[in-house]
Image (cartoon, rainbow, N blue to C red; front, side, top):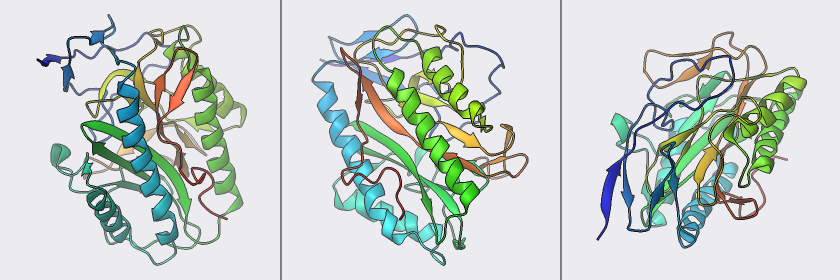
Length: 305
């Protein structure tokens, strides 16, 4: 018989600067407590992080593959004149056709199957009537539920011709994500992941957003740990085989500060500089990492050209 356990979120021991207060959102679990199904074999670390079993990786691969396939298929629909609302409608239809469930529709009042963030929008952009313009860059973030498992991923797209400065931002953001993923293996720490991302981004004269971060997931949308995209080597909880979480750095061309608009969802750069984000869901294996949200067609990056 399964049982449930309420997880208590704990702030990891990470390097300064301190984490800014994080607004509630459909994709960020920092200040949320969700009830996690725990079977008789389930384990929770002293940091509140769930340790999943070997058999659980299959469910995460299935959910992650669907989310990734949907983002593959949406690429051809991104063009100047397209609306973000239509992109979201197509995404919702694809989720339904696959027999899956959108994790975001109805989540804390959110009404859409995706978040679509354009240009200086950092994350959690709400789809609507806005038409894409030539040269716009956008992040599309999708989370699906398949047989109780959550697949969460996002990537960058461009409408029309990609400006050179935006191209470089997107490249650095993608590479920063992969730098973080390369660190993942048992014995490393979450501070090691954050440091790998931060040091790479700042060496390229860009900034890492500190107000938002990755999160644990699996049988729930958001759970410990907080996966910050900056940090100090050796700090924070140690990675263990069976941990599932997202890594999703947001990188700005300008300063790292953000603000949330009056809709209580949309986060933008305070200096209106361009922002980009990539996200994978991953699991820690005995020897390294399993990326659950790899693109089936090899289009995670670039999605254009």
